[in-house]
Image 1 (cartoon, helix red, strand yellow):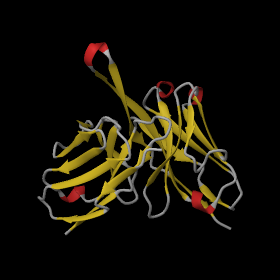
Image 2 (cartoon, each protein chain N blue to C red):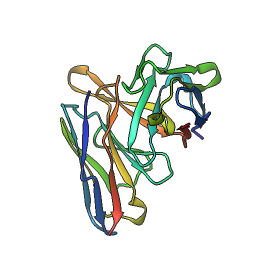
Image 3 (tube, each protein chain N blue to C red):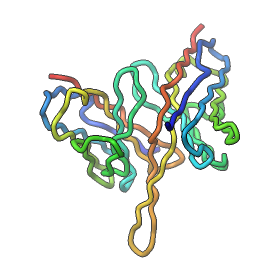
Image 4 (cartoon, helix red, strand yellow):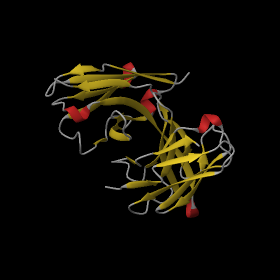
Amino acid sequence: DIQMTQSPSSLSASVGDRVTITCRASQSISSYLNWYQQKPGKAPKLLIYAASSLQSGVPSRFSGSGSGTDFTLTISSLQPEDFATYYCQQSYSTSMYTFGQGTKLEIK
Amino acid sequence: EVQLVESGGGLVKPGGSLRLSCAASGFTFSSYSMNWVRQAPGKGLEWVSSISSSSSYIYYADSVKGRFTISRDNAKNSLYLQMNSLRAEDTAVYYCARDQRAARPAAEGVIYYYYYMDVWGKGTTVTVSS
């Protein structure tokens, strides 16, 4: 099974900050990496697919990069609505998708 | 509007069974693979099962293999999850999610397909407790 590890598990930041969340795969997954945002009591929302492609309707302050085993999600200037939990997910193994454990982004 | 609506959750005793449904609308359901993803209280997301558009390919997480069965009825635009031998650790919100794919051409005419879950339902809650 492919394990996904996110860091940090939690992060405090202020509005306007630049924030980076990291996701590492236990083996190479090329660019088969997606990022989701989840707010309390809500379903996850797709932000980035194929490591760096921005989903339609997602603000351009979100960006993704990486390939192989190391990936990052960057928010260039935090907005109040960005405080949420973020998950990475690999789709390299289509017979067994796996998610990272999540990164909770909190207001400082 | 593209929409997924889950139903069928509830309270069940350990060892019991439950069948979840997911009603799809606003898109050609029969053209997409579908997934079930769950989230235990206060925990992260866990992929549970996937089914291809024609039900030819079906996959399960190890944690539910042999106990859960995914199925679909394309004529009814519906996805199902039959859950048997339920355990306390199956307590979670269960989401259905559409599997989308994006094609990217590479060198020498090769095309790579990237998969992601682009549409999610609001979830249905399953509680396993005596």
